[in-house]
Amino acid sequence: MQPDAATIAQILKLKYGPPESYNWSPRLRARFGLVTPADCYEAVVFGLVDDKTDLLDVGCGRSPFPFNRNAAEILSKRCHALVGLDPSENLLTNDIVHERVPSMLEDWQTDRTFNLVTMRMVAEHIETPKQTVDKLARLCRPGGRVVILTVWRWSLSSLVASVTPTWFHQAVKSVIWGTKEEDTFPTLFRMNTRPGLKT
Image (cartoon, rainbow, N blue to C red):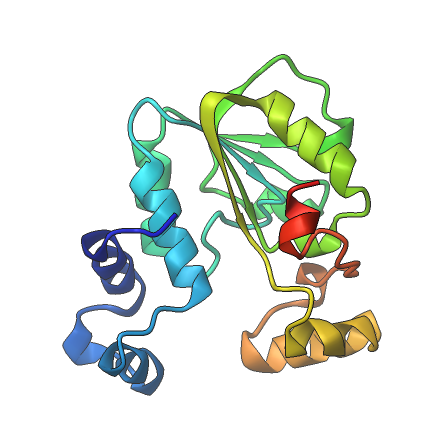
């Protein structure tokens, strides 16, 4: 699913400010009509949410959009319900979700269902893809959507991550994105190809 140009423009403005104030990186992408996967993901999710949306954010961490606080706050206000599910203690600092569920997806026992389920940079950590997909199917209402942002199994970053220890991932992430140690988790890459996602 591709977001429309207007929603992408809204996400970019909320994240980077007006185009005339962009720093070099978003300015260069805009010049060539490029959008990052994260910006595209945010625009897709943003475009699917209205006041009737019950949204489950799996592996939510500190925020559904960790690098776009403005869009995350609007998303939270727009949703009917925004539930964050995460076994990490990072969940405790998430002030965007309406409800926090400190659990692994597979372990969560609930009768609730959602018309939108999101997973941002979580699939690469999944140990049992089929069990995860089955659980997502049970949590998603008929006609609902599951939106997943993940890295491709055969990308350079995934290949490097496959042969390096977690401490190295954290060192690289802290330099590039300023992430903390508690924001880095072991990667397995069992759900990071089209066949893997169709399990």
